[in-house]
Image (cartoon, rainbow, N blue to C red):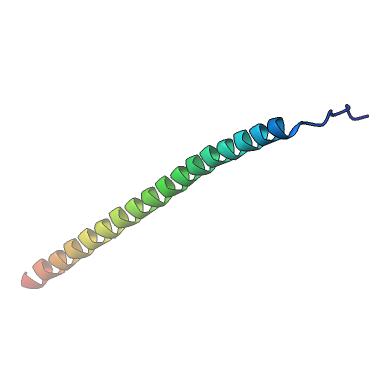
Length: 70
């Protein structure tokens, strides 16, 4: 069976509520920071891959031009 829980007075309840709210806020901000960092990394990876694709495309075009000159 569950343990008996004694009721809290109003001051203790307000203090616990404020503490819970503060911890939730800190947890939320930390989670948001992680999410934003993830989005930044994904964007950076996508830009790096697009740059690599452009470089490869430019190199292929240069090879085709050089082969045409032969």
